[in-house]
Image 1 (cartoon, helix red, strand yellow):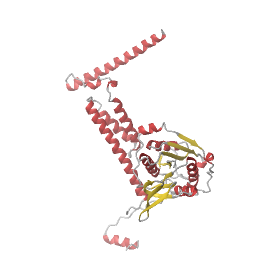
Image 2 (cartoon, rainbow over the protein chains, first blue to last red):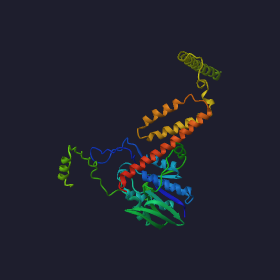
Image 3 (spheres, rainbow over the protein chains, first blue to last red):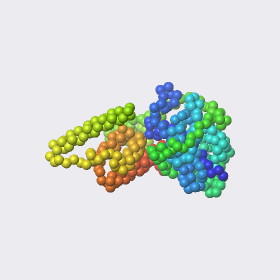
Image 4 (tube, rainbow over the protein chains, first blue to last red):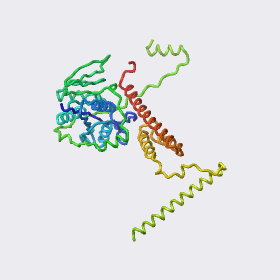
Length: 254
Length: 134
């Protein structure tokens, strides 16, 4: 038991920002837009830090894949209480094509290298909404997985995970090492305050390249088009009850 | 010799600054007399800034709030304006007990803001990803 937990954090466009699609439909506008840590990743970090505070694990390592700015996201994780960071530098074209499969390959390689006991990830990112990284990582490592966790407890060398499933909750017990993905109700993440951000600057962030880990990040997927969601249709005002009934009949509602 | 010369220059600059400051204070006193007709000035203007041991506490609070303001829903400019006016409103407070109380209130506001941001984010996520009926 190494007592080490790997937490994946992703830098995404801030949840409060209005997303704009590029005029050529090749993607969304990211230049000069506020970015922050994916909310589900915050929950994952919080859970790892809580486990550490309960002294159930020894070290929390935050990992992020992306360009130079991804370090800010790692810094936020460090301010929340992670011990050290690993920045897997992927930039330019590779970053544009970086998908769940590539990230999970990187995470799997890192988990082996760091001898992690547990990997905690957010269930999905709010930019691509893939919800695949955790599952793929577990598959690549051939580790058990507890996805959509709303409660996690370590019991010896097993993890008890309460999962949110359609129409209820499911409790599973899995062996470690394992992959856990955090759902919204797992915990309430703490805020990375200014003093903690300052303190986090003293913590170490190691820079690695995917090639150092022996991972090929070429993607086989091609994005054809990105479109805005359909606009909501305007409503109609009716003068009288008869009009209303008439319109409803017309629409086939009654 | 060179050092002495520089020192003198420095001193004279300081003196100049001091004189200007004194002028400012006098002007304010005069204004005060004109307005109220009473020759009395609030102490705060005369207390040297460094003398207050709570100064660093207040600055820390201001910095932390300013940092939190970057995520404020109505924008950081809106928040900064209000933050500044809230601090300026209490600029003349000299009683250490009162300052301590105000700093405690500021820390409470920090807690409130953190809760606000968390709730706002949580609600946005819930609205986007979860069935509203449940």
